[in-house]
Image 1 (tube, rainbow, N blue to C red):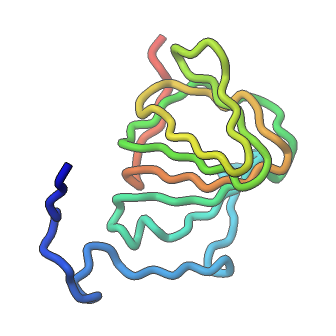
Image 2 (image 1 turned 180 degrees about the vertical axis):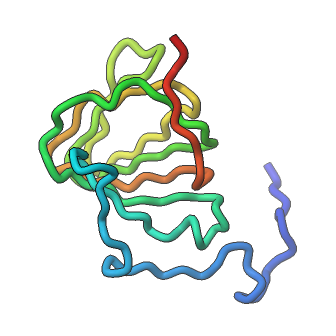
Image 3 (image 1 turned 30 degrees about the horizontal axis):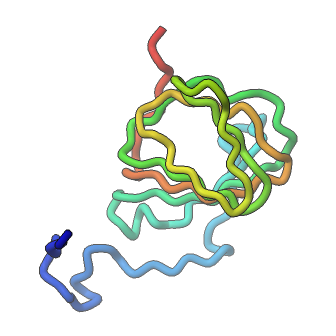
Length: 142
């Protein structure tokens, strides 16, 4: 298969499609979505560098897993999770058994399909990539 370039290139750094971005850990503090959240995340700055095309965040557990997330789905083109440490378990609508993703593994979640985080280790650490950066999360009908 032959692939044609999507833009005239090569280009100089000043004309690149995405911005040059070097993010250090000190630049991005972890934040909890709510005081009772059992995980915290930090935005790795990729959304700004890609003009909103891609979100990349680093998530880690900060308290024991105490309840499932509940069934939900995301309105996005891609949802990828790479587990650095520990494990996370997802249930997907239409699949009989949950899927466990362990350290060193990556899962590309089917876009638009309802899912539920049904378990995770207390030492979970993962990188999540979402396309596009801004997206909605919704409850499934019924």
